[in-house]
Image (cartoon, rainbow, N blue to C red):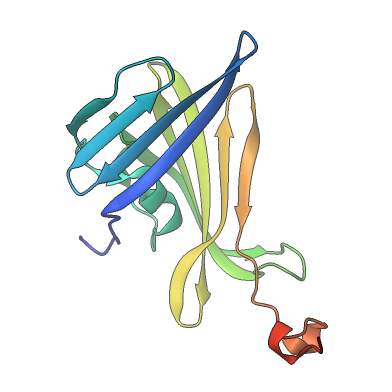
Length: 166
């Protein structure tokens, strides 16, 4: 929709340790329905919130957008672009994408007044713009960083398992 791929289904699992017990929360979105299951609680089924799901907004974005209405399966919120840096040289090491990128820096309010920040680096891979690096900054929790790994070739010392002797 509007140039953004849309997921029709996804499954998210959150695990948290509370008082020595592991609590698990799953959010399953399928078409227009969300099913939320939490340890010790009854299942909840509801309509999917408006907007793009968070995973699609982060991983399948192809351009810096001024703002995006997104949801986490439960609540909708607006992610706003606060800085755009075209033509950024990105070096991530030999096993990961490196090259010219566009950096899109977003801010959004999550859980009442908690500000979160997301940096998305877009690069060209095989003629398509894709997310090549993603950094999520959440207060108190270590930053999550995702990097696009390059495909291994035989020239890099990797071998095809089908070509190995038994």
